[in-house]
Structure formats: C-alpha cells, structure tokens
Image (cartoon, rainbow, N blue to C red; front, side):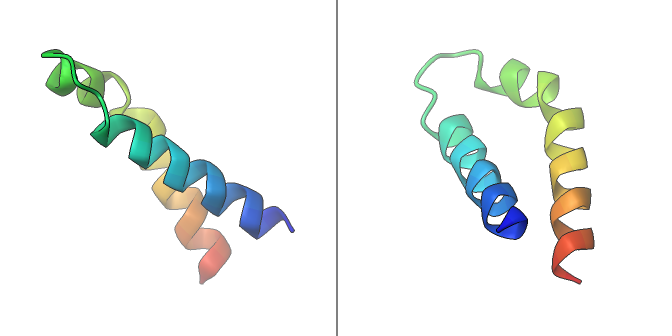
Length: 48
C-alpha cells in the first residue's frame, strides 16, 4: 500500500509541474529540483 501512495504522489507532483501555465516554470523546477530528486531516489529504492 505504501508503494501505491508514493507512486501516486510522485505522479501527481509530476503532473502538477507540467501543468503550470506561468512563466516561472523553470524557476519552479529549480526550486523543486531537490524534492524531485529525493522523490526519484525514494521511488527507485522502493521499486528495486
């Protein structure tokens, strides 16, 4: 059940980033890069 929660959260955050219509998308991506990276690490460690 934990795996599903993490994957769902990851997908929603990813979707959110790509749905941003503002001009600050690059700034937003840079701001969230650390969070994004840690989510990728967490996801890969769970899936492997």
